[in-house]
Image (cartoon, rainbow, N blue to C red; front, side, top):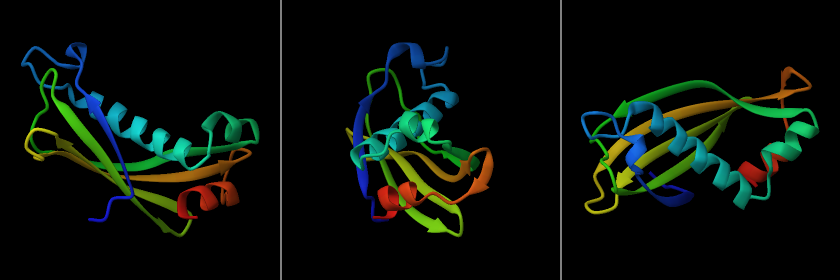
Length: 130
């Protein structure tokens, strides 16, 4: 897969459960943070877009947990993107730095709500697909 964005992060101790592995819900935080950093790099602010009445929201997500991350593991969070109709489809993978093992995979579909109604956003199109 051709990834268009990557960020590096580290697992914090409070993100792990009693088994010593990252709690499943934290992977959602990791990939959301990656999307936000990607948008910021592309010059798009969620807060500014919300003030204009445009909100990008998750419509659907498919997740696969492969190899668990543990406390202090460093990982790469990578994404690629395509547009299907009015949906932005993000393909997001998380790899452990030490061995490049695939730990998590997700396909996340976002749509835009314009003034509360499903719609298109030229700003998101320019920033994401530009």
